Length: 250
Image (tube, rainbow, N blue to C red; front, side):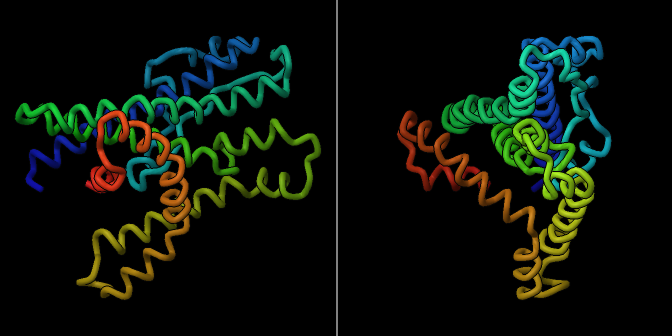
């Protein structure tokens, strides 16, 4: 990969992260507002301005590992017309939004791949639409994990009538478990992607791949959650599913 191609990929990746995170957090704010809570609007979060939503640590994790989060949208459950329902809808809004955007961006990616052949522009849009799809889906899956500050924990919080030992454990230690999983995944990727066979050997690369716990979870979940999207658009474009999987592994 030459310098220009790498630069196009990095710019496209950054822009995709900006779009995916912004839509995710805006959807939280919008649903909370519609459920009766004006708190997100008071804090300026009812906006598609990316600067209002970024969390430095979450963005760093997203940049380094491909998993991360944005700044949580502040809400006041007491303002919801139906508090438990409002919490559940607000918590799940970002996940639903990311799945919808993955569904919408994927056919745009296929159009770019099949029909656009303008030098540099087609390469840039190929990367951009590919990242918009893949980041949307991975962010959807990542936020289903039941660890704070992710949406999965908020959903557990909204649906839990009794706060038992598991809930207390997740509330107290979930953030640290999440950071550990991200750090462990990052180290495994360093060994497998950058050090590789020349440093740790083929067997070492295989072992490090097996130890990437978060990577296994994300790969398994995105494969099955992404299958309906690929199947539907594959039929629409007349492309076999194996070819679509191959494009995602570009």
